[in-house]
Every structure is written in C-alpha cells, then in structure tokens.
Length: 82
Ligand SMILES: [Zn+2]
Image (tube, rainbow, N blue to C red; front, side, top):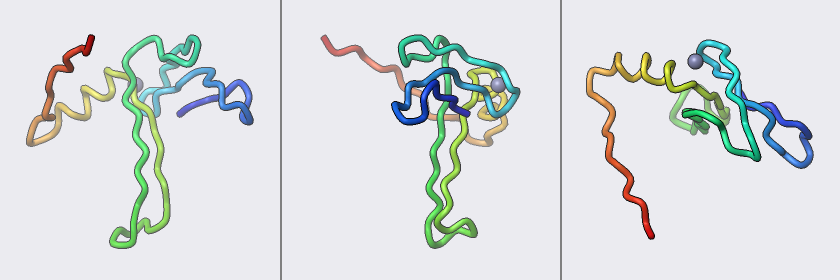
C-alpha cells in the first residue's frame, strides 16, 4: 500500500507491506529496501471484470509467497548498461 504526502502531487511518503504491515521508508521517491509492487487490471474473462487490484509486499513476504510456487520464479540478472 502506498501513502502519499500530497495526493495531488503524488509524492510518495512511505510504502506499507500488505502482507505483514511493515513500513518501508521512501527517500526522494525511492524505496529504501526491496519492494514488490503489483497492479492487476482484471479483464472481461475474469470474475473481477473491470476491477484493479494494487498491493505492495516487502521482500520477506515476496519470498514467502514465491517459495510456495510449484514452478520457481524465473530469475535473471540485470546487466547494467554503461
Ligand atoms: Zn511484508
């Protein structure tokens, strides 16, 4: 869950993990630790047609959830471009 200092300017104040309630500090718009952010727009073929779900998870909650997957997450390393 994202909280904003000012809703009009959308300056991010802090992120609260939807899984455990942990507060993740944000400095100058950048989260100070790893955050998983989801925004799912449900479309016609789903039971939630037209609804949008948003949530944020701390890295620990993300790991707990993805460790339960039958098929592991596909993870690649990002190479930095110079
Ligand atoms: Zn969490």
